[in-house]
Image (cartoon, rainbow, N blue to C red; front, side, top):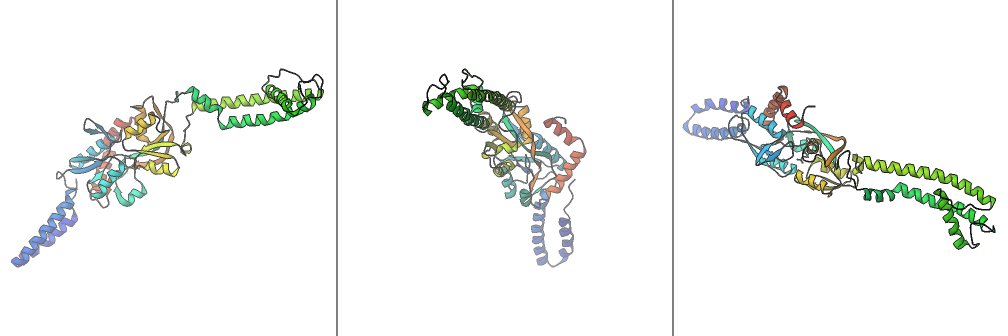
Length: 385
Ligand code: GLU
């Protein structure tokens, strides 16, 4: 139960003896009392049961806040309704477009408090007061596809594989290596009457030699040199070819497997330079700018998920509870989270600095946690863990 503000009792108590004074003084005092009374009621109003409705700023972030046919539900809404009930206060929700606007509504006094998926941060703690944490959260990455089926586009994957850096380096090395046996064969064989190089001139003789060296490297030697030195070179080169093909195949297989089991984004390190979507004004935006991702901000969380599915962004970075809910509901089968939570945060109820409401809300919140009411609401939205 809310307690009477001690400041109010003090003012009322000290005023009584003065009422015995002269009428003018009494009138002045009455006026002063009236002013005093009205300010104390204004201060008390926020904590007194059953008076005006509490104005609560919120914002749609499923499953914390869900709006369906004009009705609000979700973890944060149900939690607040339970707190409001304990405070014997009715609620008037003010829906704001994003977390920045929610905070602005609280800061400007348009709302008495805010609740949704508001992360407690040191910067915000400077400008606001927060309740005890209401939920553990943190950032996670969402990509298209499911674990078993990562957006298969075989043609694109094949082209990407052939132009991958490692394989191009391998081919470059092979081309350079070919020059060595090609020159040896050219120099020795061109003098042999029955040699495999039909001309003594460097051009086009060297091309014949290079063609032979390339074919032999790929274990397709169709001609054997005649000169004994050339034959030794040929045998050594054939062995090099076997080793080269083995390494090349291994590299190709490894790249293919990696490409199949992992999407291009698997951890926060992969976000650098990528086109990443998130919620406008959120803590994820700050994080993504710090890691130098190409950030695209969305106001509506639904638009954020659509942008991922429509390939407008490579990945989404957002609050883990929201992403996990999406992957098990609307986004089931079309999106999945990768990696674990990498930026731990807690959600809190936000108040203007010095709000007398905070203490009462904290008491109610802790009482809900001590009973099983909090747990019931939690399990309803996040399941049993
Ligand atoms: N938890 C994040 C934040 O407070 C995102 C909230 C939102 O987009 O509603 O910045």
